[in-house]
Image (cartoon, rainbow, N blue to C red; front, side, top):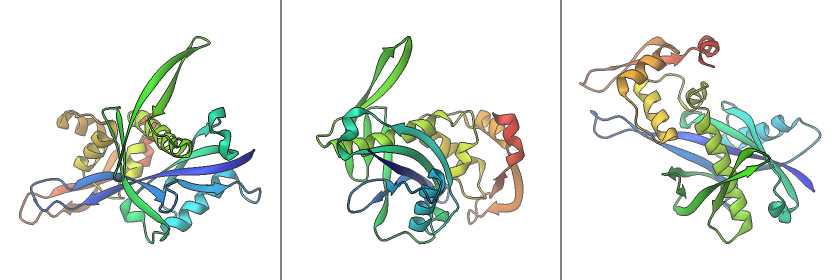
Amino acid sequence: MNLSVVGCVFVLDNEVNANKKKNDIKTLKVLINKETGELVRSEFSEDLGIKDNIRNKIKNIIGSDKFHLEQVYTLGEKRFFGDNRIDILYMGLTNINNIKKLDDNYDLVDFRVVEDKELIVGDNNYKYKTDKVLKAGSLEYYHKIKVDDIGMEKNLLEMMIVYKHLRSRMDSTDICFKLLPDEFTLEDVRIVYELIKDVKVDKSNFRKKIVKYCTKVDVVEDKKGYRPSQKYKFNPDSVKDWI
């Protein structure tokens, strides 16, 4: 059995809204191999540590080392042993501004989860459900995606596992800021939060919660004739208060 390191890299894209009164359009994208449709994959090498192995691979693909990376899961279910690989799964997060030169063999495609029932990757839609199984007094969750190909199911499952991990950490860590550019508005933070969590929040209450983790910068967003928005940076010293 071989050890494979897999990186599921989510990128926050930003499209300028033609209507200057409206916020820019933000979407979540995932980095995939054009030919295979797989996530970023690197066979384990003893020359590097596991994390450095996949970090170098992602760096070479996007032309930048400006991304967040953390280990999420080890996929070792027996039914996926057909490819003779056990996958160590990492989550990568970055903003579209940090993609400097995308490798021609890779693409960024839309990624969405709709009402915890449907998974959208690029132009493809997949139905799924989550089963709860009680084992040894503890609930375990299994995502079942309706596809015929076991390799594709494994690939989609790894995306889902990382996405669920990202969503679960939005309220207790600074993970949301890993998707934003260096400078942002408080509205940007709210939009990203709602995008990942698939919820709507009270704008005023959300601003009060978030602003204490941010520092004002001497830049305002020019809305060409409309009231400018204050820009902020994330204050890393606030993390001790967050967690």
